[in-house]
Image 1 (cartoon, rainbow, N blue to C red):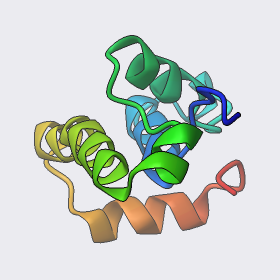
Image 2: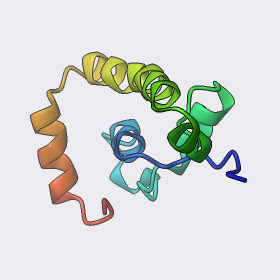
Image 3: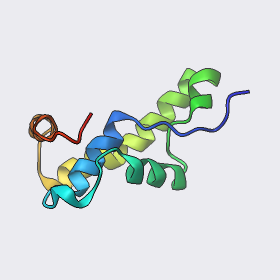
Image 4: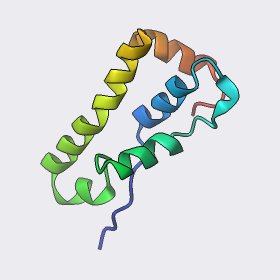
Length: 93
């Protein structure tokens, strides 16, 4: 049995970083808030998606990434700028 465990993916940590863009000490930056939001919206990637169907996993991940790309657009930043900011922050693992 593979439970419905939701996975914290790299984009969750990056969403956490973007959510605290102007207040770096606002979050632990471990992606907990964004992964819970994904779970509540029923878009999050679960462990059973990986074991049962690659197509389901792909659909779930694509649906979940919509928020990530939307946040990049709203903040008007590039992935390169986000990566640089993540590397500079010691909280991001």
